[in-house]
Each structure stands twice: as structure tokens, then as C-alpha cells.
Image (cartoon, rainbow, N blue to C red; front, side, top):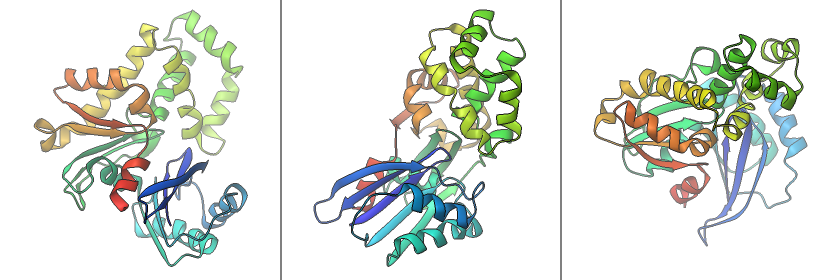
Length: 278
């Protein structure tokens, strides 16, 4: 058995696969694991609390996570994984490597994430050779769920959207202005909080102002990230993540308007990762 984990800031998708039959045995979710926001103790506590599946110890564990790009951040995740699973082989890589391996397998290509956060890279079939930094939800993450939620909340609080939209938003979520600001500036995981509003945008995407809000985020993603990859002129841009999947028609439209072409779009990297590792 091998266990594969794809972890963003919001949730971790676990897949247990049988190497002999090359098939997925079971899959499940826990909360997200991100070493930028959690220390070793809190990650171990999360695993002990939420990982309730009874299963044999996997022979190999491949963990791909947001924030797992440097040696120190990988170590923050590796130690609690090693304590909890006590398996012989544990590999910790970034969520961007998960996207690259899932979307491109052993070939070269452009791989992007549009989920709670956003990221992009050029992958040569083995390594990530070019990477425009994401910079997180404050300085970057263009086109992500957190970015869409931030734009929505900011536009509502600054009276930039039609009054019926604002009224409907507040009747849906029951938040006051002060409560929203507290979630963003004082509570943990503000990026998760903001990304949660992407669902509202998706459910009301027929409203022109909300469609334009999504397009603005995607345009910034292509302008500030993809335009820096020379390969994007001749190669399709591949995406994984919930935002890319649910807004795929707008994403393809926005790519075309900016001179790019969208290739594969997957909701989750898991199926591709299983193909890659088995």
C-alpha cells in the first residue's frame, strides 16, 4: 500500500492505493496542513484528531503540501508524519510538485494551481525549472479562492457592488462588517475564510459584476504569472484546483483574451498522482 496526500490550506485529500493492482483503495479528507500557519505539535494533534481511518501501515507515504517548498518547512511536516505513521519511507514535496507530476506526468509542461491559493511553474518532466513565486494571499495568489473572496468582501464593504448583491450577501452569511474584519485580521487562517466566499460567487456567477470580479482575478494571474514563462507562447497552460475546475469556462475565456491556451483542467491532483506513482 502507498498513501498519497495532497494538502492545501483548506483541506488535505488522502488516497490509499494498492501498488499491485494499481488501483485506489479508499480516499478521504482532513483539514489542511500548512507549515506557514502550523507548527509540528499542531500538525500532530490534527492527525491524531482527524485521521480516524483504520488501515495497515503504508509502505510508502508521499505528502504534497502548500508551504512545503524549503527544507525547514518540509521538516515541520515530516516529523509529525513520521511520528504518526511510523512508515519506512516518507517523502514531503510542495503542492506545486504535486500539480506538475499530476498534470504533466513524466513530460514537460506548464502546471498551475488555482485553489485556496494560486501558483505556477514550468516542469521539465523531472524537476521544476522555473517558478514565479506565489507570495501568498496578501502579496499574490492572483485568481485564487482567497483572491476572489477578498475582492468580493472588499467591494461589498466599499460599496462597489450593486446594493441588491450586498443585501443578498449579508442575508446569506449574517456577518457584520466588524466580524468580517476580525476574521481577516485577527483569527487564524484568514485565507481559508476569504476563500469560502468563492462558493457564493460561483452560485451567483450569472450576476455580471461577480463574473467580472472573477475575470479580473484570472487576468491578473495570467499577467503577473504566466506571461513570465516563455513556454506559454507555444504550449497549453494546465491547471488543477477547485477554482480552476468550477470556473473553467471563464478561465479558458480569460486565457484566450490574454493570448494563452488552456490545456488540462483537473479538480484534484489525486488521480494523476496515483498514475505517476504506480
